[in-house]
Image 1 (cartoon, one colour):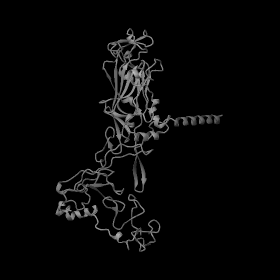
Image 2 (image 1 turned 30 degrees about the vertical axis):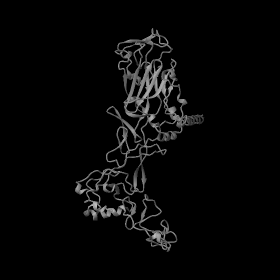
Image 3 (image 1 turned 60 degrees about the vertical axis):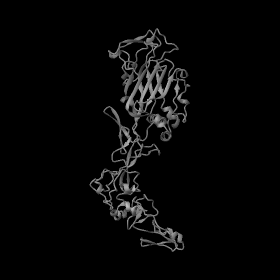
Image 4 (image 1 turned 120 degrees about the vertical axis):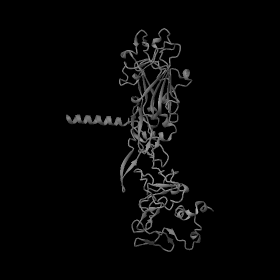
Length: 535
């Protein structure tokens, strides 16, 4: 008996699990900004795109009503039911049980019928009864689920949902709601189901939520998930597709991004074509719940968002800072700031801020090249790298980098030489040297089978019989050189010999390379740079 009961429970669990898998969290990925991995050099950080989890944003909302005296109860007044104009109640702001202030739109009791905000009745008819309800967070938010508004009165005959991306300075429509879209807004009625991937950003007018007065017809939606489903499938099972579209489709991510929402109530529910002027207490607005689910926008540089001084702030990673992680931290401006990317799936691209060149300097007569800020912290400003004979050249200075430092992974420090408009890698590792750590130190040779960013690009042994094999018939002599046949040359006999080919041997006058120029600078410094650059 127990075994059969176990099998039944197991079957139930399998069924539930399979169903849950079809309904994943809409934004259930990118929850780690960095992880430690182990390499030959020890532990290092591996960075990835990351974002905070979706939360109930109404816990942090602030609300503003316009006009400010639109809430009922001051003075006290009666309001009556839409279906029965003789079933009435009282609104009185001085009595808690009879008051209906704005905060009851998003209190903990939610849709409980006795906690709701309510406007004054339409006692000023035929003057329009209109209300603007502005929700603001002082923070950029990415919406992740439907916006849901629950009315205790009938749903309004006319309403516009608007959004702002600049903290309420400018507004744009999100969606129009009307009993007759063509008459009210000169728009053909549509449903979100009429949208396609190509028209997902279209602003529509819908008649779905503006008709009927019944217990189950109090809810109004702005459909976020249905728009997601255009890319991720009906059950949002293909989130990789959605993430890719958010990265590559122009304005798509901005469409789901807000700083403020504004609910413009333009005409209350009347339940009929004409307003009954003898029962104006039937017409008002009442909202018991507003649901907004989203996440702090952190530009894929944070997994956390905290409240500080009544403001939401991203807990920025990747050497970024700011309320939205929208800029690089001081001393980490080695390249321009960039938002993270959802691609490639599943980790995305972190686009971390890189260490910048130190701007510490000395007097013009004693300019020096200071060490860069490493990825582990700020280098000691009193520690100076070798001067390379440049300390007496007044036009050489450390400046803000003009392009990325490139050392092929053999150094994480650079200095920028303004007079040459270029970088010099500092402290090249892995037996490399040169402006970009692209050459080998004396006594080491280029491993032609390795790429420039390989740690084994420069070796002690020139050749062997396993990895560094002499090519084209050459033989390895004591691991220090290849004995090449007459028709080939090079470290590993990899180059055709120029014997009998005068054109191949005629290299002509070679251009003066940057490393040579740097080595010559100490010699020509007493002559002055202006005299040297005469051609």
